Every structure is written in C-alpha cells, then in structure tokens.
Length: 321
Picture (tube, rainbow, N blue to C red):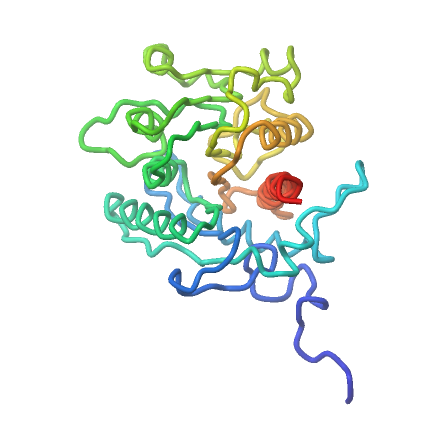
C-alpha cells in the first residue's frame, strides 16, 4: 500500500474526523510559545446560568462543527470571496484549548481567565473566546488595558445587580463591565427580552449604555447602526447566540422571538469590523444538550465565529497590504 493516506490529515479530514480544534488549527499547549495572530480559548463554564445548565459544552461543540468547513478557507459564494485561507495555511490561528475550570468557584475560574487573556494580549495575539455562559465577558474585558468600546449582541442586557455575593453570573456581567475605567462605551444590540426589568434598563442608560433594539435595527438596516461609534477605535465584541431569532437557535436556553435573522447579523458584524478596530471577541450560550439532532445551533455558532474572524482578518490584510 503505497502513497495512500492512512491517517487523516489537513487535506483529507472529513467533517466527522480529526482532532476537534477550531477550524483544524494547530494546538498550542504553552502560552509562552504562542506565536500567532489569533488564538482560540474555550471556557467550559456555565455555573453563572441560573436556569438550565449545559452551555459548558458550547466550546467543544462549536469546535466540532467548525470541522465541517473544509477546503482551507471560508468561501462566501454570494460575493465570490474567500476568507482565512492565508490564516489557516500559515498557522496564524491556533487553539489554546480550555481554561482550567475550578468547579463551584467562579471567582477562581474567572481570575484564571483574566490571567490567560493578559498573557495572550502580551503576545500581540487576538483572543477569540468560546463560552460557556455570558459570565465570561467581564473578566475578559478587565484583562485589557487600553481604552476600548464594547459591543454586545444579545437579547438581554445582562445588567442585574450583584446580590447575596453572586458576582460572577451571566446576568451581572455588563453592570460590572460598565465600572471598568478603560471601557469607553457599552453598546447593547438586539435587546428585546420582556424579562429585563425597567430599573435595570434605566440603570444601564443612566450609566451611558447605548441600547439598540430590533425596531431601530430594522428601520436603519443592520449595517447602518454604528454611526455613533468613533471610526477606527479599538472595540471588543461579545456575541450571545440568543441575539439570533428563537427559531434559529433551538439549542439555547434563553432564546427570544423577533431576533436577528442570519443576514441581519452577518451585515452587522461585517459593517462593525469595517468601522472599528476589533481587538477580540467572545461567543457564548450555545447549549448542545438542548439542541436538535443535527446540532444546528452549534453549527450556526461555528459559522458565526468563523465568519466574523474572516471579516476581521480581511480588514487587517487590506490595511497592511
């Protein structure tokens, strides 16, 4: 048996074979050896979710479904354009694996997360974080030092007050984040849940939050909602899968009706990447245990992360060419 592949490699892997790193990127098991433009980090933590657990498996499932993107690039047939081919072929994207979770100690786990993000940023690498629940955004953003704007795609504002010592939950993250001195603005996009309280919304607005609801998005067009943001400044983005409409995300415990359709979020992410300098992003709240048999929510998550990374990298390459 000569010249015949026995072990699947980068050219021969199917969507169901191979080690499930994000987009089949190389594994980097030591941050001190990190030398890449982008690094994926998993945070399998869902102890901040008060209703139904399971989003701890989000990162694993999103990685698995990212294997379905073969051919060494992401190809947008509508625009006849490839994304990420050079990133993938030159190993400019690596997978650092998962944060070491300390069960029942959100404070310890989130401190570890902040430390890892600081180390990644010190290597001049952009962090791409896969949750987990939305608890993770605050400890990620606090690891940044330079001034940044924050854009949150979500159905809920996650602005609950800290009570009874429950600091690290998925509903307190953005109230905590708003206290960080280097956060220049908080932009909460796609908010529509009737489970948010009026007092929390009032607090968010009083503290300077710009809340962009679905009627405003549809009136202006999702690509035209960033006029208030100063072009070219640093921006961190967090994407909750429940930003999408409920019908698209059966594997999400917090899904709400009247959310983004795929093209709406696609255009929002693409236009945001053009206007701002994206310095990192996270993706959260897929619950594979609740998903349908084909795992469409995990697949949509993998597509969203890969697509957004493609837009970010495309802008970077145009800027340096």
